[in-house]
Length: 113
Image 1 (tube, rainbow, N blue to C red):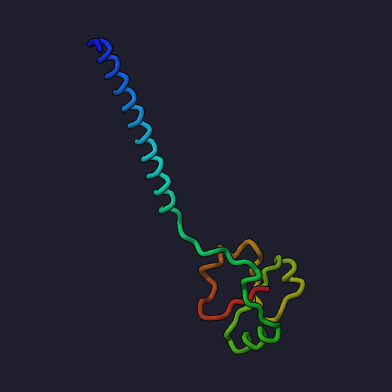
Image 2: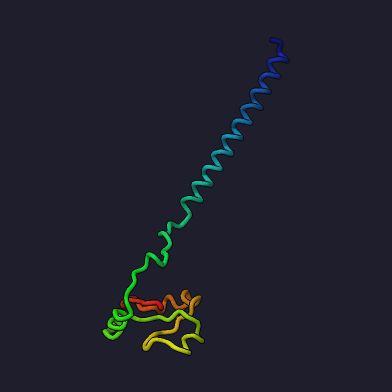
């Protein structure tokens, strides 16, 4: 093989090696990014649905409220609450739960109507 052919072949090998390094480096960066995203994602418990929540009867609710062990929250609109509501219930219209979250008692059963 001539000297020129050797230089051409060496140049091809260098280009191929650079391409392989670029591909390997890109793959490594991609894997690191995916790993960082997976690790950075907060681990949340599965979302609760209405079927997951315990149910109690109106009589049980009344008894717990009388004993001071429960608070009944009426999540209907303020107008519906003003028109008619259960005695002792607290108006907490749907959509305002997040703002009131810190004010909800932690020592009693919370019942939402």
